[in-house]
Image (cartoon, rainbow, N blue to C red):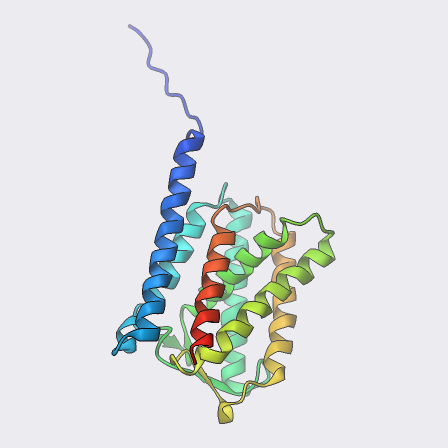
Length: 224
């Protein structure tokens, strides 16, 4: 009887390219639809309600393009997600991180006054910015600093529209310099964890996600 052999091989390049184009198209569609709805719709609240879904779907697609999701990768995800969430809890209740602020309803259900998905948001941003920083031939410390700068730069684009769309609200509607200082410190710690984590740090979708999200908030802010 003829034996049956199962051959396991990587998908051909054209399949990977097609998957990447589909994922990029979906990311662009999510954010373009959200931008038009928030900026020009008579009912922006309807589009705000899809923010948690957009964040989750974007994270899932990023994970799908992470090669070799080993134990080191999941340890990194859990550590950064929990660290980001706990930093926000301390910030909301004490003002010792970031300043005095409170979360609105746009980012979804809350635990301890902080949206459950905020840890995922920190994870996605750390992962994307850390991946981008690896495109340059830098030593470990400059790479950590570059990743942190990319994270703070992203936050600087979000802050001008955060209260308008009920993401979060600052005391007296003033964004404190402490926010950016603490963002940079925490981002450096998270980027150090990313650099030291044991997994393959390459994701073809990451640059596109960062660019689309950055432009999304930049253009929203320019319409204020």
